[in-house]
Length: 297
Image 1 (cartoon, rainbow, N blue to C red):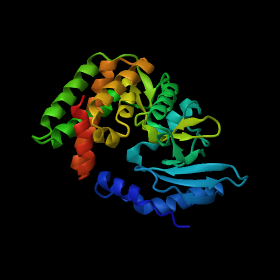
Image 2 (tube, helix red, strand yellow; image 1 turned 90 degrees about the vertical axis):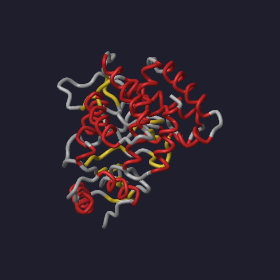
Image 3 (cartoon, one colour; image 1 turned 45 degrees about the horizontal axis):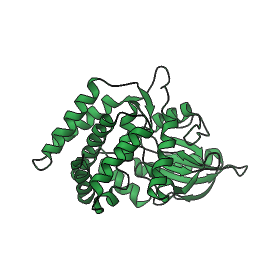
Image 4 (cartoon, helix red, strand yellow; image 1 turned 120 degrees about the vertical axis):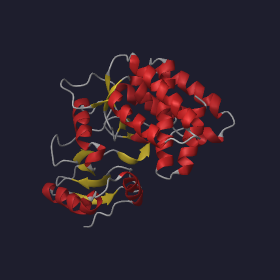
């Protein structure tokens, strides 16, 4: 069968693809090969799916449900494989095959259409935070994972290069916050890297499990920062959005025993970085929301 990538994935990859990249052109053949090698039965491609990978719902010959995931090298699928193997299913989706072709992962089937985002906001934050806590473990010896300092260093360089006068004050504040945070980092942990409510799906083995990590080693406040701005469109639409955001920082920091000021600093950096990047690729509405949110911090 032909594996047609969802339009959401096509658009997202188009924003980040380097010159000459032909991963999308090879995708259908790669997926077909992965299916044939395992004698999998294909149920459907997950739509709308994610922004960095093709997700296919499949079954093994014995009827066991699974997920086949294919991602291009620039989204670090081998780091995802290593992190999932290290977590061993504790708080995260289970890796069903420890090895395989580069960029091809076979995962435990969760309920792909049911995330904690479907819960009322307060309950969703509680369940998401509890899931995240289980992922914060010692990184493996001889770690292959990128550091927070390294990842944010690349992001900081891109922010400086693309920031115009309109966003320069926010960029300066975000970069200053990063420098201060990295000057005296606390204990280092293996982090999910891109955690948010939509990355926590309902499962059978455990009620909620994290998916889609972009793992990184660093302090826990960096991981929690992305969760602070979940449902940012609702925050911006609310007359009390700024006050709600500050309360959220306080409550999440207290519930997960993270320093509140460090969480605020990383939330600022990550929101500004995402907003500047959205401006750069033409997602004006996303950029507007993110930068307004950052201004509240």
